[in-house]
Length: 234
Image 1 (cartoon, helix red, strand yellow):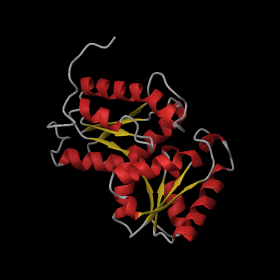
Image 2 (tube, rainbow, N blue to C red):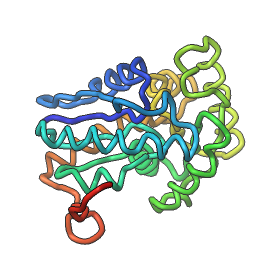
Image 3 (tube, helix red, strand yellow):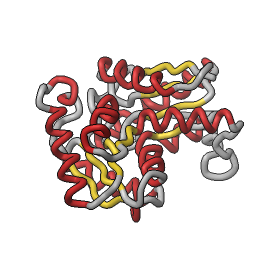
Image 4 (tube, one colour):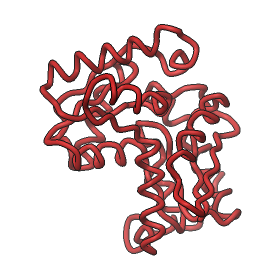
């Protein structure tokens, strides 16, 4: 089985880290590759960033189809271009926000999301609602660390950890969801420190794709997610 993880931003070091986290949970016989778009924003922190990243994400999935990948992960918490990717891919395509939130719902009655910037909170609420898990989401909290600074700021880990503590106290939640692929490598450490399950969407999405492929299940091609109509693009 071959799974392609697409990091929608163009920061190569983050793509490498995301790939390592993804491969750490891959089952026997599963090959995981991580790529990013050829062009696009270095981080995704706005609606504009998502729109600018989307064509590159779809292009990577189309390339994956030619290369014979069995399934795909969209590794950004906004799940950019997720539905478009599902239209063009034969195998399952899973976004890390949906995978993380659905996984958190198995582990407790409520969860809190800790994300990067406060400006993304509304969008996270919207996607939780669209996935039907908003009733489980007790709160969304921003650590105010920009995405690229998760790798470069020595204080970033402490700020994420402190925000997680505040989220648990404020929401009374039982599970934490990390709201950025750049936080993926923090999940195990935070779970031990805080004493609650901490869900990283990258690993949750990879294992979800693997499960769907092993079950022989693919995205329905009847209706909305059928291949897009063939047409000229000017």
